[in-house]
Length: 172
Image 1 (cartoon, rainbow, N blue to C red):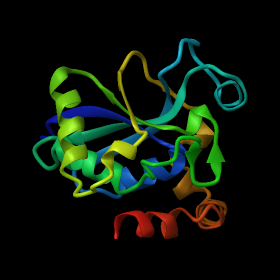
Image 2: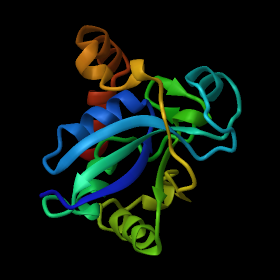
Image 3: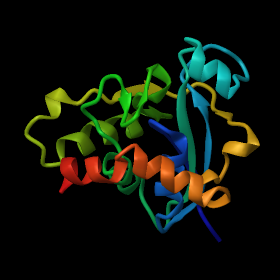
Image 4: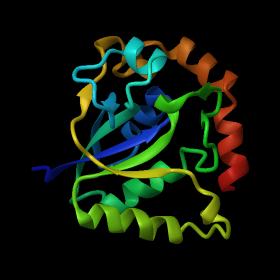
């Protein structure tokens, strides 16, 4: 029986972050959604086109017997550009900024430690936020599992944004 826990990450477009986590052993599922702002039950249009304070984020449900929170942090780092203060790849705006939303002090400390352990000499230039989780709102159904349900459109989007190439440049 799985020993389920949840973790929350914002890494730009939630479709890409959801895919990265769902393909990780030990992750049961990832749910696209919104968090970090004050507006209750926000919609995609409100988050994207208005200043709601919400980030596009994912709720990661994982089996802590198989994968640790620290390992999830590593997956997160390797799938974002921690230097971009305007968004991620071709998506710009406050809803596309990167952040880890912690639920307790252990997760907050783990975030800081993971950043130090990346082996990057310029972590002082990282702009990824660390924020206390308040409420996570699942996104609309058409955003869930977008990479599976719309594989051609998703591939064109991901390739067109240069996400894979830029990540290789940062992390390899």
